[in-house]
Length: 197
Image: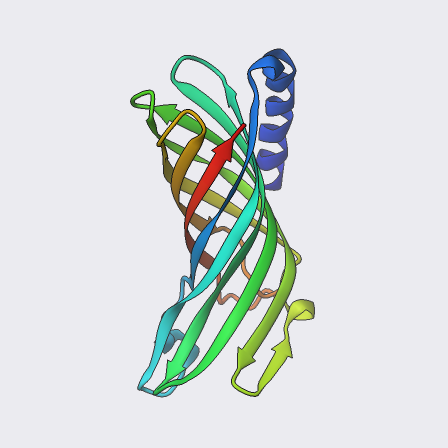
């Protein structure tokens, strides 16, 4: 997976030197809904505990570079909040995993204003903790410092400069540092609005 990510990034740099004049840069921000790939039963929690999405935020910089008439490369770097919340009759415990993430995406345009995209991502953990009312536990030493992921989404250009984006980010490696065969991975939905200069 790591080799694939670095190969894609290397190819992008080569193409980028040929297409530099057409690049557009901008910024984006929005809402994230974090989740994980495991159900409550997988943790052995007592009945009555519910799993809920962790609501967070994301913000960062974007770059759009046309590759052809109907394809666009999108390079992004952003701060993104992932995780999950467990609710025991109103008593909540949230697992917070926050990353600096870099995504390399290719968008196919079905019309001048709308397209679907996909591509790999790589995140570096900034914060990892369990938080509950009245306390918290630092988990940063227990989780992998790097997360590899896949992104799938759609983007709508509302105007020449303003875009609206909906994305599904799927973690491909385990969140815990130790390999215990549990395969605990992130699943995050994001909704953002951005501006291209």
